[in-house]
Image 1: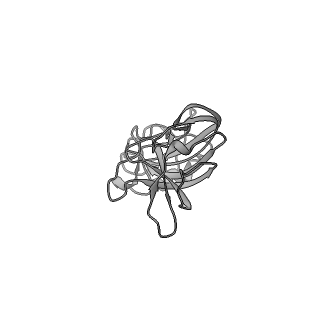
Image 2: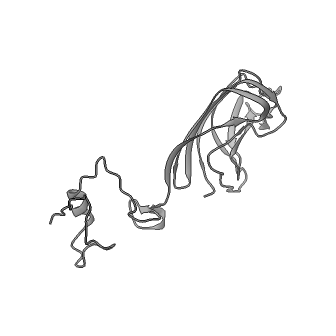
Image 3: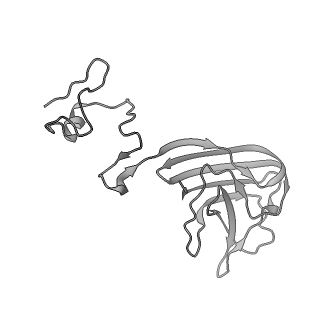
Length: 194
């Protein structure tokens, strides 16, 4: 059996279940249609199934984009503020880079604001989601710890930070340590509330 596209490039006469006698199969469609370089829209207005028809295989959201991260402070001027993300279902992969040329630091445990989606509040012993971090010039306010970890705060669009070291407890980091010419880069994955 072969499927033939009409002059406008669409298939007519198919219902949601295929032809009335069920003669159109997924293999027929896959072997007949060349969809390379094409865009499929509105196959199901609310999503598609991938790899099966169960609820766990249902994809109802995919997007990519940019966002503008900001640092917690006053009278801030930036050298750059870059953020990109990919959202697949409720999973958000992101990376950001921020560098300041001038800042009036404030006392706050919020360090970076402006993530593209509100994070889920999954509860548990530690509802924060750690992400990969690199900083330059950021004063950890006198901490003797040797490692800083940024984390997505639950139910928010911001990052907080904590320090740790060998055989030491975590200590929250305050935004008051931000100064001119400091930069922060972060990459990671978190789950969105919706």
